[in-house]
Structure formats: C-alpha cells, structure tokens
Amino acid sequence: MAATALAIQQFATLSEEECDVRIRAAKAMLGERLVILGHHYQREEVHRHADYTGDSLKLSRLAANSNAEFIVFCGVHFMAEVADILSRPDQISILPDLAAGCSMADMANLAKVERAWRELAEVISPDEQITPVTYINSAADLKAFCGRHGGIVCTSTNARHVLEWSFARREKVLFFPDQHLGRNTAYRMGIPLDDMVVWDFNKPLGGLMPDQIRNAKMILWKGFCSVHQMFKPQHIDQFRARYPDEIVKVISHPECSFEVCEKSDYVGSTEYIITTVTESAPGTRWLVGTELNLVQRLHERNKHQGKSVHFMSPTVCMCSTMFRVDPQHLVWTLENLVDGHVVNRIRVPQQEADEARLALQRMFEVL
Image 1 (cartoon, rainbow, N blue to C red):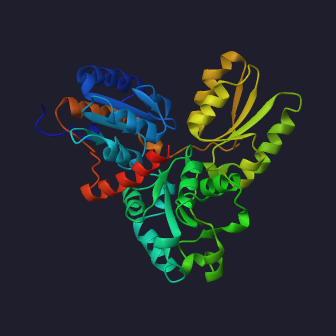
Image 2: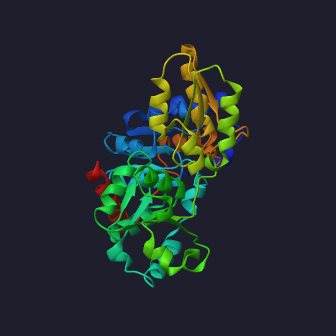
Image 3: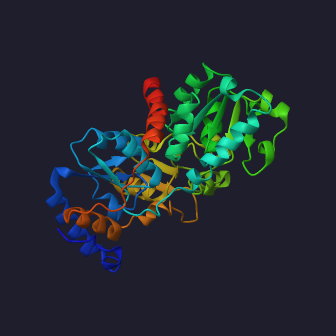
C-alpha cells in the first residue's frame, strides 16, 4: 500500500486508451469489493465501465443490495449522497470528481427553502396545509427537510403517485427544485395551470400576493435543468416539417417546458424514454428531448433496426457537471482504492441521513 494517496495531477495527461486499460486492471484487482454505477447521462468512455447503469435511485438501490464495499458513483453529487443514505454502514460511497454537481439541485438550498417555509407561515399554516415534495435531484439536507415536515421525495417516474399521496394528506404542495416536473405532472393529473404558482426564491414571499398562495394547489419552485431548458416547441415543429412522409415520434423528459411536453407524443423518465424507443417499430424516426449522451447511445443501439434517433436541440448541449467525471478521475479513484486509499468519499451526517431516509421511505411505500 502506498504511504499517501495518489494525486490526481499524475493522471491528468493519460490518454483514453491508457485509462481504459488501467480501469479494467483496477476493477479486476478489486473484484467484488467494488461496484461502479453509471448514470444514463454519463459520457460513453466512462459509462462502458459501469457494473450497473440507470437512473440515480435505481442505481443506489442496486448498490445497497450488492456485496460491494466501495460504491463508485459516476454521476453527480446528490446521486452519491443518495447512495450513502441507502447503503449499509459497511459500504463507502465515492464520487470520482467532487466538482460534479447539479445546477438544478443548487437552485434550491436549505437556507432558501427554510426561508420560504417561514414566509409561507406569514400567510397560511404550512405544516398543516402544505406537503413539501423534493425531486430526487436535490441535496440530502432538502430530503431531510421533507422528512422533518411530513414530506416526501419523488422521481420523474413516480411523481404522479407521490403527488396523489401528498394531496391526500394536505391541500397544497410545495414542489422543488424543478418547476417543470411539478407542472407537467400536476397538469396531467387534472390540476389547472391557474391553480399553480411559481415561487421566485429571490423575491420576498416568492414574488406572490397572499391570495395567490391561499388559492394555489401547487407552489412550484423557480428551478430548472439547464439542459432540458434548451428544447423549444419550434424544434418539434421544424422536425415534423422536415420528415412529412415518415413515421415521426417525439418523446420528452418531464423536466422540459410545458409547451414542449404538450407537443410531444410521449413524456416520461429516462427509463421510460429508453424502453419506449427500444420497443418501437422498426423504421421509426424519433426526436428525443433529453441529455445528449443518452440520445446518442439510443441511436447507436437502435440503428440496426432502421430506427433513427435525433437530439431535439440544434445546439449541442449536455450535462456539463456530470461530464466532469472523466476516465482520468475514474482511474485515479480506482487505483487509490487498490493502494488502500479512499478519495472523495461522500458521507451524509447521521441525523440528516436518518431524516432524508424517512422521506425516501415514504416514497418507497407509495410505490
């Protein structure tokens, strides 16, 4: 075992080919002590080394049920936090690059949400009237906030069931950090847009009048995904006009705007998008409104059936923070483990983890 951890600077100039060889060698040496998780949006040169691939919650649950001692999450910070919360005490959650965050998650921090809760208390009784719902794309302390206040966590797959659970208990929902998932889900449940308001966390009382808060069923946090914001209704119109004589289908993630989702043939999570495209008829042409790496992977895996999968935006955009987890950081992480050193461990404080786990458990019970 090396006396000190290997420095990342030693790996910065490695080629992709060198990294590939060394990652495979380190994986072989660590064996069942290691599990690598690869999110759907991860770059291909990292994604190929994952033992499990999928969305963040699915991956965390798979890792927790494995025999692995080390959980290396090739994703972003909140994902590694969920892995730590759900894993056993003897498991260690690791993020190869601590700079891999989530701009959407950062739009709702604990200080802003607690301030909103206090301001809402000036108008109504939030602990009696509001269920706080946080998208899984959020920090652990916000999941803990929901745990303390009778709230719950949701994913893009189960958001409808979670909202149904929430409204069965209290008349209103505070939904953060992504306004679009909340709006698109609630609208498809039959809640009118007029019953939804947007809480601007940079303004007193969210920029709302007291009567707007009293009358609202959905209070949507003014947050969004920078990638899914790139997709516009005109992109769909232009695509359909380009292929008037073909079977054209449009599928979008619910983090897209309301207007994009209304023009889409299908709306759903990353897992739903993958399944829907994969199971579609040969020869179908798809326009997909979600992250570029996933769309490119879908195209490669379906082109042999004559399917064509297109990225919705004419501008190249990807999850830039997840892109920080590169092969160089992955091999650095693994070779340190081989040498007996844990780098970039993600550890959620015990009380925070317990409260966050409570909010997650409520979600599991809904399912």
